[in-house]
Image 1 (tube, rainbow, N blue to C red):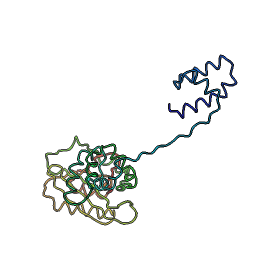
Image 2 (cartoon, rainbow, N blue to C red):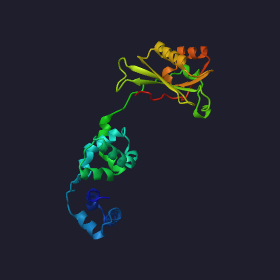
Image 3 (cartoon, rainbow, N blue to C red):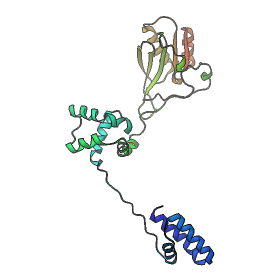
Image 4 (cartoon, rainbow, N blue to C red):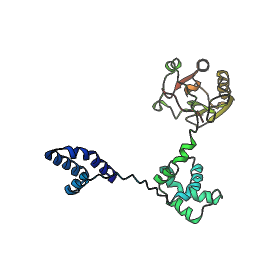
Length: 263
């Protein structure tokens, strides 16, 4: 309990103390002594006097790391906006690389502060910058109920990493901060076993364009045999399902809930 709270407690008890009988006064004093740690004599004097409660004095101390805020933001951006706990261990390496390429030009004192700053101080200094940064992307995934029950769910435990032909398929929306209007989407297909990947961009979210992109990738696949394509709900459409069945392709989804695919 700080001094301001103790003074407020005594003020609340003061009127009651003045109207109370002797036994009640003793109980009030005991309660205040137990709560504040004051001596009984001090409490009796404080209850008998009318004192105004002092206003809280808010003391602001400027951090010694304040001068490096600008250069810290540059290092933070170069790290792809890592949090303080992940950024602090790599600070010496990042600072050295950025200095070598002329990306930052701190003074000797600023460089020393950069190398000495802790993870919690990094987060504290960058708190406002993180709020101003806003979201990095928007999700365009809309989980449905019709196709959700038609496509079996497959988790990581069911993946056959050693056999080519198991493709991870996703749709990435290049929409920036808003999903309004037309924007480019990229169909990304990656073979889990070999790491082979293909990306096909197309404008809009037309079902026809998405299916054409899948057909285009299938024609260039260096694989034989049936394919298994765990997809996001972005491309879990009736036409894509029919295409998969006609082409002897097993379709599954890797999650029951919607996924964040906007970038």
